[in-house]
Picture 1: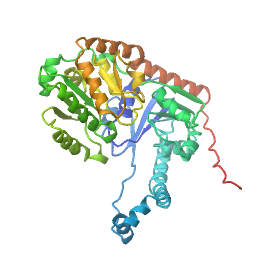
Picture 2: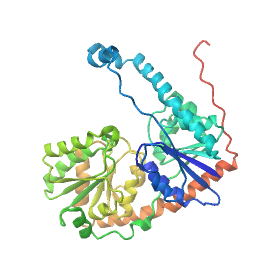
Picture 3: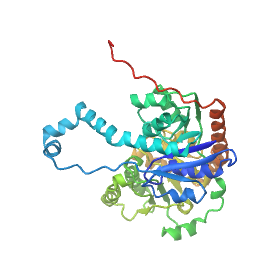
Picture 4: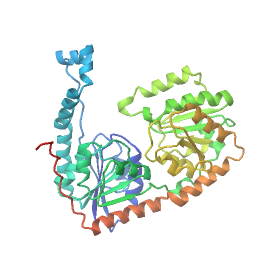
Length: 419
């Protein structure tokens, strides 16, 4: 089976991490993998190093708006700003985006599919972000599955294109429930948890060595936040929680590791300014992008997961648990499926800095918090292994092939009342 994996994110993220773990471990005689990426993504070499062929397509470039009288009116006057919030403006933007982005990208993807001639297209994220890929697969008459890794509202077009899919894979029960609640189904559906290679975490550096390498104090409690610096990941919530934590444990240190996305480069300076405003300039360290998180995890006492929107899953939580570190995470999204409350860490009330601080302090004040780390390792070994992830995905592909994988016809648009 020739499978074309389509992932058009502009940089390195969780969806590509999952593919980097999956593709080299597929049964090569049975499955031939190729990945189709955005040409602006710098990560192609990581897949080529595993012998995975990589195709690229241009996505889109947002051109700077010309300083026309209309643009100046819309941006610079109260009436113009009100116009931008109305349905007419939203409709006009939708038409523009369809003509200048969606249709050209669909055509490029269609041409790539005609060149690659796969037996199956694996669209590697949410339906609402991958309409062009799903449409291109339908136009090329290639069966497609969507690996849904995100939570979000599905519009009319999303629900219509979803009807052409041969299957849906969900990263968590939370995501599966979200999609089902919006009336979207497929001939095949399955929850497949992403998995982790436990052997990669079997030989972490000792805590003192890791802290020396990172320039952290040897005896201080260290709380780690690991993830992209984007607003929904909640690093600002973490800073406000650390203000409470350091009031109780002045020696505590917070570490924020990750880099900003290109669309919100201003977020990191804002976080640094907030840390200074809260009096945390000496208590919080910004570690930047770290490709291998194991040294960070070895240095930390726990991982704080701080998303202010429901996290669909959270690979970083698996990594922390595999490293023997307790995890505190919001009591929503995929977190409760990963973290056993009071056993491998704690769940806290979402978006509540005081509740997050309390959860952190409960771990730091526990003289035998190591038992939570050991319980986390056992939970990963039981539920979230890489071997199980790969086996489940290959079984899903075989099920699709066994049913013929025929592409369902494109459904007709609903008629307007009275027609």
